Image (tube, rainbow, N blue to C red; front, side):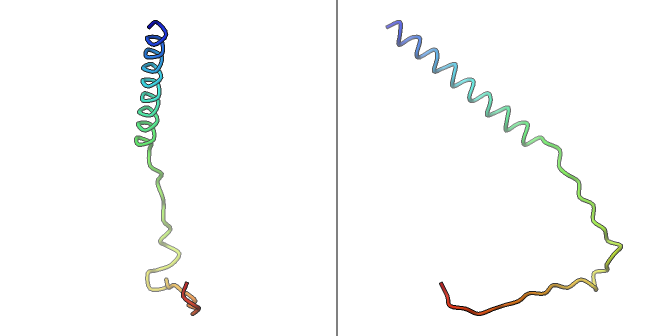
Length: 61
């Protein structure tokens, strides 16, 4: 009976440690400051921008 009590106590401590670590990790990850992105809009106007793509036909998979 003593061994079962020790195992139960040990597993409870392990569960609390794992859950605490997971909560701490998620909290620090979700509250991380977001990166700021600066766009250079002086080099090209919206009219000058265009995209090109090459379309090739082949057998359907």
